[in-house]
Length: 232
Ligand code: AMP
Image 1 (cartoon, helix red, strand yellow):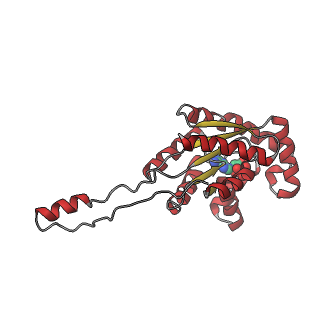
Image 2 (tube, protein in one colour; image 1 turned 60 degrees about the horizontal axis):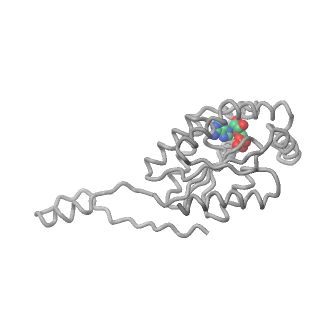
Image 3 (cartoon, rainbow, N blue to C red; image 1 turned 30 degrees about the vertical axis):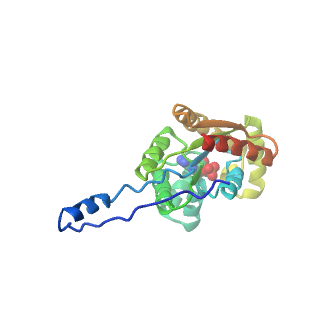
């Protein structure tokens, strides 16, 4: 279990003028400090559509006490609520095309801001472009934290397609319904998302795990990578 984060924030002094030098010294110690969260565990769970990110996210949330941020789920909530954003996003999602970076980055920041007191985040389906990865790094730095590690699930193409077609029988997701659409999403992944792995590898925060086999064995593989990073 990832233990409780040792958060400790000093009290903050708010804009009072010190009356003499002794107060001035105290006031300097109590200057507002940047709000930092260096002990958070922030994971990016990475892989093509059908790699098992959603399934493994649930297990990881239970083990590490993380907050789940799935941009696909957030977009589907917008669609269900019938918002303008949802209506615009639906056209692209149903065609297997990524929605614009600014849309998902804004949604993710709202979630991050609202949940900074937790143990950390698991990002599922985000970042999906290098621009999103850069924005995420910048955003987390602003809140005094960072991505701990990206774990990529490796699954071969035929298995992905089979899994998504099977999921389509029960998920009700329009984008799981036919092979052409699934192939379109895999092409989006290859062209726009796969380069995100190199972005994290370049900063030493990238780990790979086989994503085919027993769900529990895949989960243990992911945990081993995370625990190894935490032990460093
Ligand atoms: P998912 O549930 O992660 O498979 O996402 C379903 C669809 O939502 C994708 O095919 C995209 O159209 C859209 N989507 C989800 N996350 C993102 C993202 N980070 N960037 C752009 N589009 C996204």
